[in-house]
Length: 512
Image (cartoon, rainbow, N blue to C red):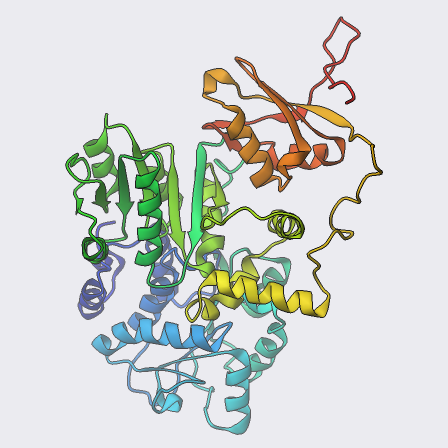
């Protein structure tokens, strides 16, 4: 679909979207806006980065009547900062069609008279309970990032807010991932709700197509993009193809790069190191046959198809994301058949106790669901560098004794003097013919599995497979972490090296 006019939106709203550089609907908007304009209840299985805000925002601005003098739509958000941010985003569109917006907890005039009111469950509950705002005319309730509210205990307040709302109003719940608690809430409070987009497992369970690395950064993202571009060009990339969501955004990024001395041009222009692209298919045709290209998405791809079209152009790919967009990026990559891994800023190697801290944090990154906490900390990332926030968190935890930068139960106990570790030999179904190098596998084991390099022994790359020795106590962890991932562009089967048939022998590594 080429324009929002095709979705039935009013010309004034279409023009307002175009003035913000939003001219063509994303697949999510194309599928969902018509459903919401008909006042249907909906569970929207999507997160920030997919075009989510415009999806429900444009639909409500189009279908609600302006000038009623009381909130007709209520948007519940996980944080006051998020409420303020969304009110600003929707407010830039609302004026074009006669609506007003406001957010509780920040500097907005007459929130009780706004057409669309934003706020946290606690703020809305307090205002409704005191009589400051009236909610009996609310026609639509939007619960934004409900999974994040669940993580931090806000669902009880959401249930209480429903008592102030008309029973037959529209219910729109957004969440990624969709948890059992979210599904239960929708089943009880949003009758006959549809779920969009539907789950697509056609690629998720198929072969992997590659790996995309991501860097979490605060707004504006240009600074993080510039740092990545600088590093790539100083390594072995000859050109960095930078994708942006639209032409206006590409122009802004180009101005920022020019300010720092980097000349950017159109994809395929071999006279400049940086290329700016919007349409992936056009860019693919322009750079075909040119070596040394790395792809960088300065704006997170809106869906799986866009991610694949962009990042299939080159073997190396990176994405700059906000903390709130990580869940969407993972879902899009899974749907497109890609593995996503974090690409943190370069840090100097530590030693001794700091190495044990690294091991503890790598284990948490590998095993814990960090997405809710990333979203909770996002307001801090706009005030401070994420690295400073992480350092402050570690400092507090150490002070309280919750984390130790010493050998504890979270790290292997020291072995007796003179004792030698036992070793296991593992099989990986990717080899020399796939371009595998020992360093590739070592990086995957230490990065994806969170295993220290000291626990990895000999790596023997064969033509069709690779054998590697690791400490026995981490062997299962390595297999679990790497099985089904992508190394050197090929999906990997990881397992213990089994005995050869007919020999009675074993491929297991000899004891050291």
